[in-house]
Length: 129
Image 1 (cartoon, rainbow, N blue to C red):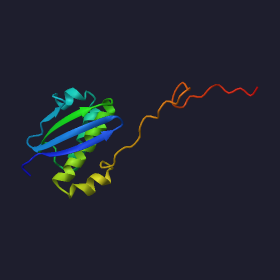
Image 2 (cartoon, rainbow, N blue to C red):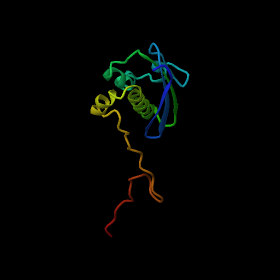
Image 3 (cartoon, rainbow, N blue to C red):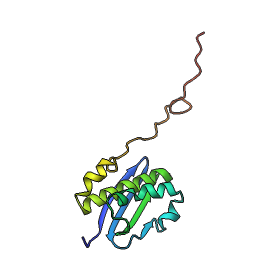
Image 4 (cartoon, rainbow, N blue to C red):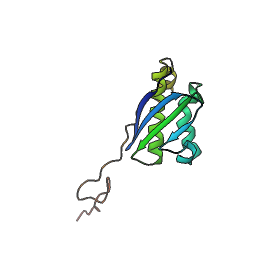
């Protein structure tokens, strides 16, 4: 593989467009480094999980363009995009990544607020009489 592989990942409201090229493991997330963009170590390790499972940590340069959502949602979007890109690189990675649930799109979204109510689930106070 000498060309660039691209993949899309989504989580909550966040969308990640990811470009994978063979290299030395350099990360660029919206023009910043991975540790700079995601200050929480737990998020960084979650993002790198597909690479560690497939023993390809440090073999690819990653360029990610993130849009929407919050920090956790964006991290989940990057993780899904990385997993999808690694499957495009080598189809044998699919079984291992599927086993750990990294190829499944987490479809949980924030429930919408209903008209006339205070929030998504909050109800008016009940009065029997």
